[in-house]
Image (tube, rainbow, N blue to C red):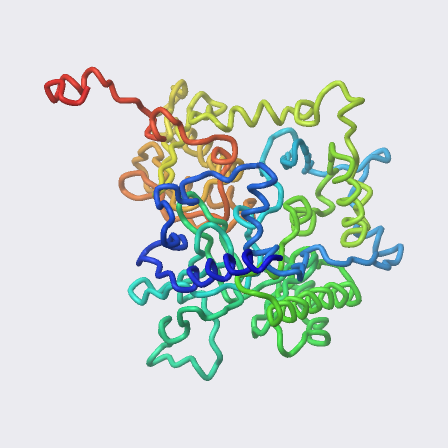
Length: 525
């Protein structure tokens, strides 16, 4: 590198360190002398190699040390035949059976994952090529505090992405001696400008909002979740009491004193050796992250979560899946090898779908495309003739329930109750399929009887139990409204498939320019 180039880089870094972000800003302040009208915030990332290189240079190419990969080195598990037979899924006439099917289609670097229950599409995800600015949920960064806002109890942290990430006081990690219930630690006391911190992304950046951070890092394995430097201890409540007691006795023997552990549902029936091996891998990952944080520059990516396909296999793939079909040979081989190391009993359920030899594409073969197109519509028809209208705003999502063509056969109250029960089931399905998060308000059809309102609310809660994303549902109000929340992690289905309308700027309508001009006497033609 020439001396002239070094001088340029040195002067550029000096300007970055001395900049002062404005209060409430979620992006790095522009450098002096630059045109602020062309901010990277307002530009959509381009797919060119040059653009990706520029975006990634701050976090990955700024130093020669590579980050820790989430997949890691997984050696094949040694499992006895009895354990394999117990964990192997059900078969009928030599073919695996199960309620779920996972279809993975990859094209032009974009991977789509469709999860079917029977023939119904239940979940759909879009995974873009791994980068350092959009799909970063679960990644661990070495960041620099840019600004601390006591009034918001938050700090903006530069982690190398176009927008600064936000760290709230509730997501800080304190030492036990620093915690005082009478006088809790303030964020301005815990964090200082230009301070280096290690934090994990808990929510992807969405629209104009930056990523959300937490200092409590969690590393997920197949059977356990490691929470470094924590006293957290737990076992999945989905497991039966007898299995929970067995797992607790195992953890009493292998749990490290300096780290917390959460046992996952996938640990049901697994041996102590398997859990111990899974735990050792995670501890090694954390040691690698710590070691990298001490010698790398800031901001920098320390740990990258694996691609979405591998995460889904790690967290959801079990004997209830009758199969996983992948239409990309290279991806199939990687997923197959990974499954053989973490779930050898059901790894043979992963198959390659050769789209060159088949007459139909994978998504056409299982009617995924057809169901996707329907899920992108604002109107959803119910079996009895009723309908749902789903409208999303920046603040919340509103779902309106209508009787439509459903006129019933007996009384109005029974017709309304039956329609609302159908709607509750379909709403739970649509929330999963469209991956709708945040605040959700549901306008059920008014019911006179309080017991009927309670039945509908309980039906909605029961339907949402199949949703792995955390939800909270309140009772139906006197106005017939249900308020609920669903944890938002990334962009939803519609956001993955669509861009904002250039004509109406996302408002959903275009102003009549002639009428507008007439209203002000033609001054703004």
